[in-house]
Length: 363
Length: 200
Image (cartoon, rainbow over all chains, first blue to last red; front, side, top):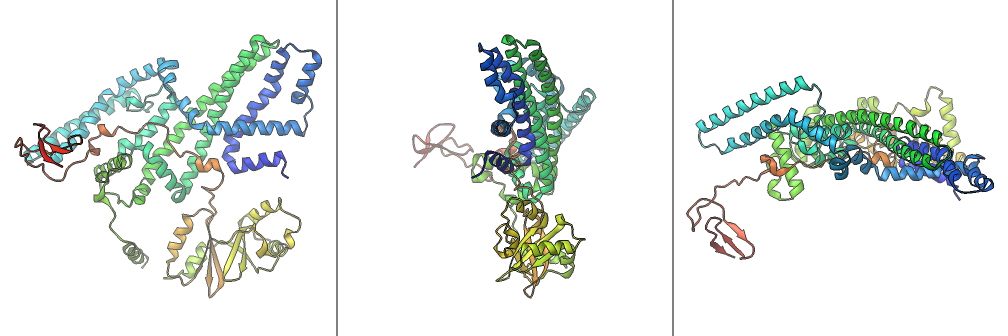
C-alpha cells in the first residue's frame, strides 16, 4: 500500500511542475509560518497549564519526525489545491473587479482612474466610434458624390484621431489604462490585463475574451513554443499573486493574534514583514501580468490565423475586411444565427486542391 | 509520393539503439554504454515487435521510470515491458504521403514518435519531444481564459445583419420596409400602420 508521502509526491506530479512552483511553494511557506509562529502563539494564549501547552506544542515545534514532515506536506498540498481552484477568483480580486471592491473598498482608486481616463481618452474613444460609424455608411451611399462626402468625413475624423494620439502620447507615453471606460479597474494589475484584452479588438476586431480559449487550445498544438512561454509567464503571475495573497492573510492573522498574545512585539514585527512582502509580491505580480499581456498581444498578432483556419475561413487581403470577419464570427458564436457567419470568406479549396498545391510547391 | 533519403537523414533522431523483442533491458543498457558517444538524454531505444510494430522510449525517461519498478525488470524481454510505449505511427518509406506531411504531423503532435521502414526494416525515427499539453494538469489548464468582459456587440455596427435584398413595398402603407412577425396575432404586420399584412 502506498504511504502518504508517495501520494503527495504523485499528486504534485499529476498537477505538474507549475503547481509545485506557483501553488505548492507559497502554501508550504504559509504552513511553516503557521506551525512555527502563529499556532504556538495561539496555544500559549489559551488558558492552559504548562504541561498542556507543552503537550500541544511538541508535535508542532518540538520533535521533527516523519509524521510532522508528512503533515506539513499534506497541509501544503491541500492549501495549494485550494489556491489552484480559487485561481480565477484571486485574479479577479487582484484586478479589483468584484463590485464590493470596485465600487466599495477601492472606490477612490476607481474614481481616480476614471477621472484620468476621461482626461486622456474621452475624445479619442468618441472619435474612434464615429470613425467606425461613418465607415459603415459607405455601403449605403447611392451616388459617387455621396461616397466622396463620406470619404472626406472619414479623412477628417482620421486626422482628429491622429491629433488625439499625439496629445495623449505627450501626456503618457506608455498606456496604463484601457481605452474602454467599462474596463477601467482600480488596480494596476487589473488595468494591465484590461489593456491586453482590448488590444486585439482595436487592431483586428477580435473579441479577446471570446476567442482566447479557442486560440489558446490551437496554439498548444500548433505553436507549442509560444504556448509554453505563456504557461511559464502565467506561472510567474500565479506565484506572485499566491505569495502576495498568503502573506496578506498572514499579516492579518499576526496582527489579530498580537492583540491577545504575550508575544505582541514579535507578532507585530511578523505582521509588518508580511505586509512589506505582500506589497513586494503585488508589485512583482503587476510586472508579471504586464509581460503576460504582451505575450497575449503577440499571440493575436502572430497566431490569430489559426482560429480562422479552424473555422475553415480564409484570411482576407486587407485589415478592414479582416475586422469585419472577426466581429461577424464573434456575433455568430455568441448569438448562434447562421446569417451572422462570414460565409463569404469560407475556404472553398478541397483537400485534393491543397494536396495538388503542396505537390506543386515541392516540385 | 515517398519519404526521401534526405528527409530521413535530416530529420531522424540522431541516436537510436535498435533491439529485438526478446532482448532484455540489460542488453539495451549494455549497448548504450558500449556506444559511449551516445548521450542518454538524446538516445532512443527502439524495440521491434512482430507484425511490423515498434516500441520507443528515450533512455533518460527509462531511467526515471526504472527507479520505481521491480528488481526483475532488467532481465525481462523488452516486448513484455509495459513502460515502453508503442510508437505513434509506422510509415513505409514509399508511403503515399509526402515526407513534409509526415513531419507536419509530428510537429503538431507533442510526444509523438514515427518509425520509418524500408521493406519492413527500420530506417529512421521522427520524434517530437515537446511536452507542451501533457505535463501536468496545471499546465493544461493554464491561461485557458481571460477574465474580462466580452465586447458590446450592439455598439459595433460591423456586427449588424444587413439584408441583401431591398425592402418590399407594404400593401397597407405603400412604403418600403420589411413586415414584422407578431407572435401573439400569429401574423405579419405593418410596423407603421400596425395592421395585418398576412395572416399565418
